[in-house]
Length: 199
Image 1 (cartoon, rainbow, N blue to C red):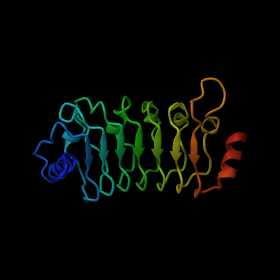
Image 2 (tube, rainbow, N blue to C red):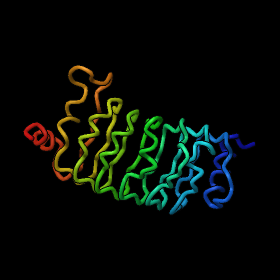
Image 3 (cartoon, helix red, strand yellow):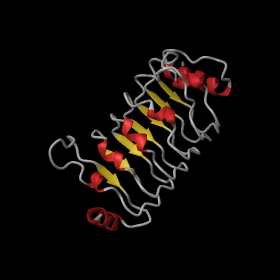
């Protein structure tokens, strides 16, 4: 007999393929991966429709943006995986999740720039922006005091902000230092660290 979670995920898949339907209000984890979706029904990011949603996995689709609604987003949404899509910029709908989002996956998109608005995600703990086309990281990332893991491998970075390298040092530093992955970029990690120190 299928579990309740399996049934809810099956209904979520049906929702993506037939947007007029409404998702179950008790949905906590929704996986719509590898479906080649180019768009999503706004209900998926509407807190009044999905008040219990905690995890949303959307990897392996063809998304270039997320729907923005006038409603408040799901206030419990802590995990959002947008890996392997076609995002060229950080969607505005993601920035509206600043009160809840803890983990954000943006691996293997088409990001050439990361918006300074990322500072709005003040509870973010894990950010994966690897395998994109980023040439720089915004200094605002250093303001995310709860961020403990940042994966920026396999981009086109030639330097990183000194503020990121200083994380975990001095008064007001986070409880855990930041793990920063910057391998496989335009410059080797030690060169980027040296450039940041001399900037």
